Length: 127
Image (cartoon, rainbow, N blue to C red):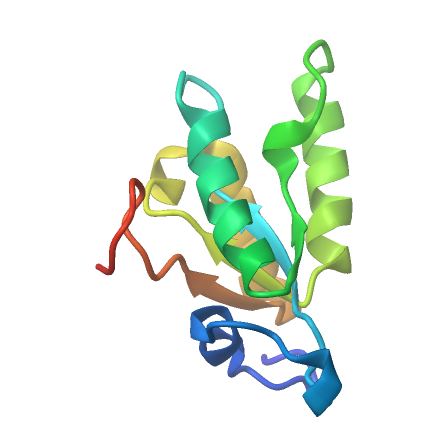
């Protein structure tokens, strides 16, 4: 299932240096998925990815900026709404260590949401 007629080539868009609206290029709405619970460095990790995509001209949906104090189910409901609004879900390297990110991966699989693995090393550089 691929979600209808949506293109599945967004990995090219996230590797592009800059989105150029003047050339008719639309920014990609990118949801970032990865381990948050139990990771003391999650904010920096998500921020690094967000900054890279924003610098390329894309719109970033970042669940790591949600406020503290909500229940786990609240976070998942908000995260799934963000995921549904995105054109593409990008999964950070540690996503398999997160129950929530694995739910998001499964959601993408089931619904045909476009997804990709983060193509850079956290802390900078190419894989």
